[in-house]
Every structure is written in C-alpha cells, then in structure tokens.
Amino acid sequence: MLANVIGMIALGFILLGLLTRSGLSIPLPLLSGVASAGLAYQLGSGPVVATLDAVAVVLGAGAYLWALRLRTRRQRPDPMPVTRRVIASITGVGDNPQSVALSPDGRSAYVGANDSGTLAVVDLDIREVRALVPVGRGAADLLVLPGGERVLVAVVKLLGGRLVIVDPAAGQVTGTVAEVRQPRGMAASPDGRSVYVTSMADHKLWRLDARTLEVTGSATVGKRPVSVAASPDGAKLYVANFWSDSVSVLDAATLETTATFPTRGPGNLALDGRGERLYVTGVDGTLGTFDTATGQPAGAPAKGDSEGGLAVANGFCYVADPWAGMVRVYEADRLYWRDELVLGGRAPIALAVGPDGLLYVAGQAGRLDVVRPEQPSGG
Image (cartoon, rainbow, N blue to C red; front, top):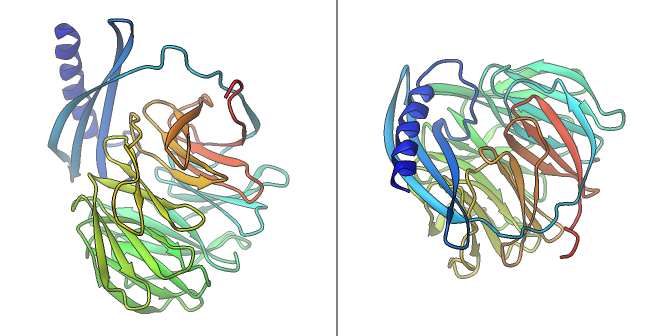
C-alpha cells in the first residue's frame, strides 16, 4: 500500500508538470487544471480505487500548485449490468469539445470546441456536421438564445475572452457583447426575456436583454463565478463561485444576494423540474445536492473521479466524468448510483438531454455520441 501511495504521489508531480506544457488537450472547465491518476488494489474483501488529484491554476507559462490529495473509494463488488444504446456517433465536431447545447425543436445540436476554437452546427435529422463556425480558441460554454436563431459562445482566455454571437443558420459570427469580460456560465430566464452571464474577471453576474443583448443589470457575486442556473419560476438565480467555495442565491428581479450555500470548488449547476433541488458538481469529483428552500444539503454527495457536464432529466442525474472515461447516472431524488455509460473514445466532457430523452455526449475525441439511456437490467 505504501509503495502504491508513493508511486501515485510521484505520478501526480509528473501530471502537474504536464499541465504547464503548452498544447496539452485536457478538460479546462474553470481555467484551472485538475489532473487525476488512479490505480486499483485489493484491500480486505474487495477492490479499492485510489485517485490522486493534482489541482493547479495555470498562470501564463507556469502553474501554481494548490494541493495534492489522495482519495480512496471501494468499488462495487458486483456492479449492475450496463445496458445502453448508442444510436449514432457524429465525428468532426471540433477538437476538445467543452459544451453541448440543443435547439428548442431538438433538431440541431451545437458543440463548442476549445482547441479548434469552433462552434459545430450539427443537423440531428441526418446526424452530420453542417458547419464549423470559427469563434476563437477557448470556446467554452454555449447558450441557445430564446427562439433558437442565435447562439452565444463564451470564449475563455486567461487574461480576457469574449462573448460571441453566432447565427447558426448562416454559419457565421454576427457580433460580440463587449461589456462582459472573461465570460463563462450562461442561462436564460424561463420567460425568454433575459440572459444571465457570469464574468470571471469581474466576479459579477450580468443580465442582458435576450433580444438586444444590451446590459440591463449586474451584481457582484463570489470569486470566479463559473456557472449560473435560473429557477423554473424565474424568481431565483444560482451562481457557482469556484474560488469562494460557494453558491450565491440571487433574487432575479433585484439581483440582490439572498443566501449563500457553502460547497467546495463548485462547477456545474442544474435544477430539478420543480426547482426544489439544486445539483452541484465539485472540483473533487463529487455531485452534491441542496434543498433550495432551506439551503441545506439534501443528503450525502455522490463521489466520482472528476467533474464534467451535468444534466438532470426524467428523474435522473447525468454527470460526465472525464478522467474515469464515463457518464455516471444517478437517481435524482437520492443520488443513488444506477448506471455508468462507457462510450469509448476519450474523456466525455459535455452533455445535454434532448426533449425526446436522448443523451448527447461530446468528448475529447471530437465526437458527439447520441445515446438512448436505459435503466440497468436487474434494477
């Protein structure tokens, strides 16, 4: 056991060194690096997986090491059989995809790719890439604007970035939103009138008119806000503050902070259909949930190896786990593990659920997998 731990620590420093090299294609969800390495060994009656995390913030050509942490978890000795149906695999969606979004009618998918700096416009009727729109290296989050005629792309840079407006039908960039510096997470209000964008540089949440994209308000939140979610009734906003280890709760009308939920290194956010539970991915690979009425955790967090895209639909939570190479599936009401989708290829990072219940998963292989998720047999 000691030799394994020593070996993993050494491997962690090697991985940290790789983080500082230019051109390395790794998931960059927060402009920080989270490298994990794992090994399995036998302990007592069952197998155990040990994972070492090297967490760093990339600053120019170097890296500042935050921490090395060793985590262990016991594997299920008899995991449920995995049943799944991959309907299609669409290639050529760009290098190192970071986000997936669907058109309101579910007939088009959009994939933002970090390394190629493109927005892929995918025709889901024929399952082919219709256009690759250059938006700039660092393409991260996407938001399809109400009506589906425009797509916002957050292009993230270490010392800047921009919010790009794309006409997917024409396959071209039509403008930018200059006021928002270093944009990251985005969400639309349920009534389609407003768009919310987090600014990592200013530690702010910006509100834009969904039609004109002019600024209608802003609020200071926690440090390094990386994602935002709007409640189904449009009354509340939730902002994940990565550096502040918190989620800010804002009144959508006044943009005043009304509550703060403490949670370590929050990344992606999602709400259930009633807005009663907020799901949060953490930098340590956990999936936590909060009761939105009380602000208290609604049970123990589920543990994974790394954080990726998050979606909640049809009573299930789907979490992309890039370092484990799978999508984890949980029952949404109690975060009980139900399934794991190992799709092949490299590092599933981004995902979305369509109106027909299909799951769309993009990974570092530059591929968009269309999956019909099914409950595991015997469950």
